[in-house]
Image (cartoon, rainbow, N blue to C red):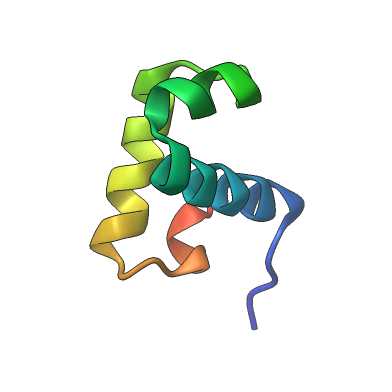
Length: 56
């Protein structure tokens, strides 16, 4: 059984914020590069928005 980590919850929150407000705004709020957000966003969307896809 795999557990959901704190990092995965953080990334899920970031993905949801980016979906709602855009990558530029999410980048400023979470202090992350846009390329970092696009990388995880692509993985998250391709998996059908499953939190398991956000595992490092």
